[in-house]
Length: 320
Image (cartoon, rainbow, N blue to C red; front, side, top):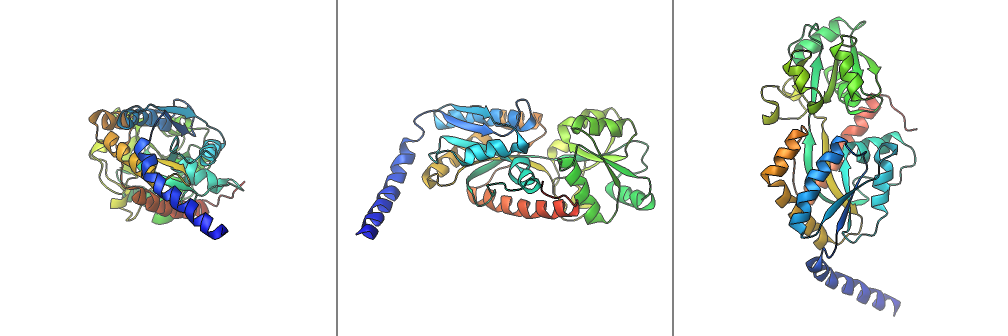
């Protein structure tokens, strides 16, 4: 009797899901952003949220819940009711890097969420001080190997994008540099500009003005392909095949959110990303539109998670 009742309840739930999606959304949707106001992820999420609300027919409002590298906001979203009225703006920092650097994190990026879709990718640019005699990645690798005792790399801090991007390049290209950590991306770039350090990776928006005025030299970027946004700057992968370590952003929902609602959210996200004003807004943040199906996003997360584990091991970082 209990088994029959359970079957009836499940059948009713499946039958009601399409009707639920048809009525969805009936009120405003919350987008949790696990980053501070004014951060790049926050700005991009607001660009998307404004037009996503238009596509859904209900407002999408951003709520910042930063702290602990993004863990606080992601966990708040994961624990929310799976009804489509809470989304999480996911990034590799909050979904992959922070969980690998902290002990007892209660979520897994691939297993514990419903994946709506990705929406942006942000390349990092490999820069050197102008006095470094390298005008491409090959020459930097050769210079580093010949000057192993003195060459150094600036980073924005342990576990940062610049740190892990640099470690990945060194491990794949078989060379070493002393890593000099700083408290943030600004001080890290300023260190290279001042000639205190030789090279680093940094998000494109933070450095392109310095590239244009000759204060640093851009050798390559971290996307696996050419980028229209970055013009003649080639990918590292042209010299080091398989290199790919860039920032990204996407939307996930609490596990158990009905698939018809996920499909409706994904369709609205695709419609949003097709708008020229959204693409232009992302470009001003140094990001490119990056979309695909929910399944594409889940597969991408799984691959990026595996890659990030390898990089963190190469960096000899331990969860704390």
